[in-house]
Amino acid sequence: MSGASSPFFGLLNNYAEAPAIYLGDYVATRRDLAQASNRAAAFLSSLGLTRGDVIALWLPDGPTWLQFLFGAAHQGILVVPISTRYRRAEALHVIALSRAKAVVAATNFLDVAFAQIVRDIQGEVPTLAHVIEVTDPARFHAGADGLVEAVGRPQDLLCTFSTSGTTGAPKLAVHDQQSCRTHAHIVASAFDIHPGDKTLCALPLYGVLGFVQAIATLAGGGACVLLPVFKAAEAASAIERHEATHVFGSDGLLDAVFNVPAAKLSTLRAGGFADFAGLTDRVMRTAEDRWGLRLVSVYGSSEGFALMAARSPSEPIEARSLPGGRLLSGEMAFRIVELESGTPVQPGATGELQIRGYNVMPGYLNNEAATARSFTSDGWYRTGDFAYAEEDTFVFLSRIGDGLRLRGYLVDPSEIETFLCRHPNVSAAQVVGVRLEGEGDVAVAFVRADRQLGETELLAYCREGIANYKVPRRIVQIDAFPVIDGPNGTKIRKAALREHASQLLSPAPIT
Image (tube, rainbow, N blue to C red; front, side, top):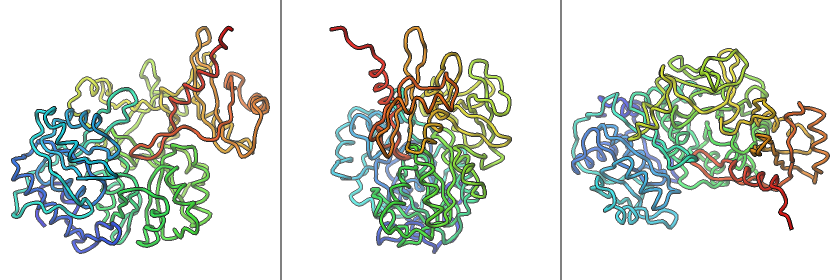
């Protein structure tokens, strides 16, 4: 196969006749994907795109998405994925920020005309010269005939991942070809992905976890079982039909799949997940009790790659459930530092998690100010996460913005949440803070329970079991937590809970 000079394209150089993609009844081998990617490279070259240029992909998961990723790598072109959940304003922001010269867009996906939207905004983006419309993303694009010289190099930027945008418009964390290739092989090794294995790729490729699980599968010689639209029953059916061996996702996604009636998932051998919905214990015990699958908690980010750290399947379930874990490579490092001074804390003490290594982005695309704010003067990336270290592992606690200063004590909300969930009738808990004038942070808890519980009962339970300053001011039972769907799974909307909590603590109006 051609393309050996592009390190990322080289992921396809082995096991040519082995499957690379399953999508429904469609199967493409690694040779098929490499040849289609060569055609995509030739097509991009025919449009005048050269090394260092940028293209955006606004496509559902499928052969075309991977084809243009590898085709761009072949030519040293940066790929900027656009979420299929985005609409006009959000897509315009990403395309303009990235200065894309071309957008590969689906004609229609879930009744949204992506390609037409891109044509409509083309006049607002001076760099955008080409709209490449794809009528069937579930098959390879025709591309162009002929071979072009592979000019992609290790240092060439390969792909971006959008940040959550919770503090403004999303930023684009960028990674180069060599780091993507290196991480793909490291994850494949860590999770024992080998030729003949198959990974259920239920998360979108435009998100960092969906992307990493797919490239790691290909690096290990395995095949990606793609699902352009996630439906739990179809995911369970795909696992059974293709005898999938690996699965990654959020706790909410896996919980939905595992609870499909009569699901037969015994071929699953390994997998990991991130806790976004408070379902860790249930997901892990279901997987182990029904199919002997020892799932592990994992950690990652757009800036430092998904699956940069994980627990070990050999650990007991109590340890495997702790978010964070051991870094997957000696080429990565972490430290925990005190928030105000930036000095390393003692083992076991809480502070900010900072990381460095091949996995850390060189920066945010076309955003030097945000890049500068994200790194320390000695080159460590500030994750913005609270964590503590246990020898060579770390435990993620929460985002720093979610931390509470209760009566002068720094408290991680998960401490209170964990305690509440030990109550025999509480199935899940979320704790947020409200800042009151004259008091500072005040904790408010929201719980889900399998029977109606009195607030007085829960407050008394807390007073008996945790430090007085940690006892929430209010504990409110609700039917469901507010959630939002993101590229890596469904997350609880802490901001909505904070707003609810603020209303609960607001003084009653004077009548």
